[in-house]
Structures are given as structure tokens and as C-alpha cells.
Image 1: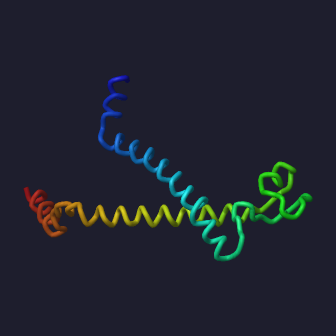
Image 2: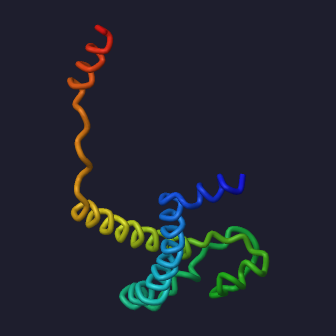
Length: 132
């Protein structure tokens, strides 16, 4: 079993996947920082002094106006944290855009795979095999 596991780990696809996951996690942190520390303050400056991370609606419980989200949750209030959701959507859009650009560039750089036999060739081969 140990030799099978070693063969499984030594495959290129598994190693490539592991590298991709690690780099993706690190890149996700970079995008989160870009969103939280750069974009959201700029959006807040344009719209007004807004900190989206603390934007929420109290669904149940009593919380004083302007209480930070973490304090409202700690006080036991049931909140709809729409500001966190907006931040997550912006993070997703940035990640999706960057991945799109990477895949697009990789498709331009990498040669197309060789074309396989056409359907006519395959059908001809099957017909010839059946005749034999």
C-alpha cells in the first residue's frame, strides 16, 4: 500500500494540484487584503465614509446604533451582515477576473492539442474492423 501511495503522490497531476491549491490560498489572501485594505476604503471615500465590514441589519435582538458587527454578534443579536457579503462578492469578482486572464494568456501561449481522428476516420476504422 505504501508503494501505491508513493506512486500516487509522484504523479504530476497530484503535485500540480497541490501547488495550485497552495498558491491559490496565498493569492486569495492577497486579494482579500486588496479588497479590504485598498478597494473598500476607496469605495467608501467615493460614496462617503463607509466601512462595509460593519454594515448589517439587526434581525432580532437589541443592539445600539453604530455597534461594530463583531460586538453585535457577541451580544447575541441575529444580524444580516450584508457588508461582509458585498466584500466577499468583490473578492470573488477579482479572483475570477485574474483567473480568467491567466487562463486566457495560457491558452495563447500553449499550442493546441493535436487533432485526433475525425468521426469519418473512426467510422471507417470500425467498418473495416467489422468486415474482418
